[in-house]
Length: 315
Image (cartoon, rainbow, N blue to C red):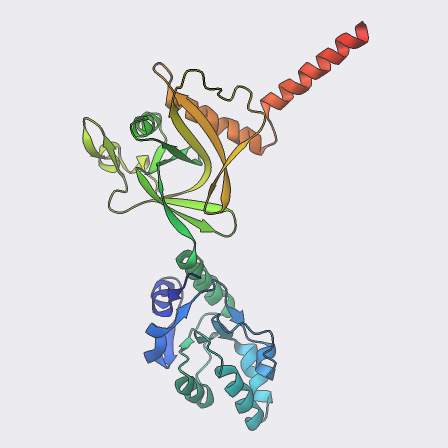
């Protein structure tokens, strides 16, 4: 299972929320997290730990502190001791809660970092889980060119020298935007969202045979590039092969898988005289229609069947 350093998460989260180390700071760099969700302490404070997930960040809010204060000193210490005996990555005190001595001592004794935030628990959790999700997201380097075409992220792939970069240049001249060329970084958010970024240091740059490396941002302006895009369509370019049966109707939607996510896939044969950029635009517009449940080939199929039925009735 993929894990991330607690220290890295804290540094990233500091950009969006207030967070500081209150106790056992020497253990922060050794702690690793493998879950992108935190746990708000509730029943755990009563000593019931049967369903606790000790691998998650644990959050103690104002309501939890009020409950602890209702316990007798010995009961509170016993419950907290049992809680800290688990290998939790960190405990976070939100809502500006001040660190009290029992928690500090148990945290130091068990090597559990205690973090603090003046933010409400929901603001803190939103920021912290957002960084965890980004850092823990499955990712892969994918060969191809990603363009933003009519607001749709399109991954253009194909063998070397098939014309991916030339197609991208045509799309740029038609007002669309470049996300990344040659190799792009793709990460999976949630269960079915693929986000693509250009890879440093080649982001915003393209290689064109005969011209070499060109910088799209410098050449065409900042409006011609985009930092990130959701991949909604994959276009596979292939040199035209005489005798091969290519899709003629498009009734069934093809899919291709990246990081376990299925994405709509269209194969476009490349041949002299075919304007690949326009075909990509049409593929994007057609995909937008499919999202709305409009499939021209199926409509034509129904109309042909109805016309045969009408002729049969007249006969």
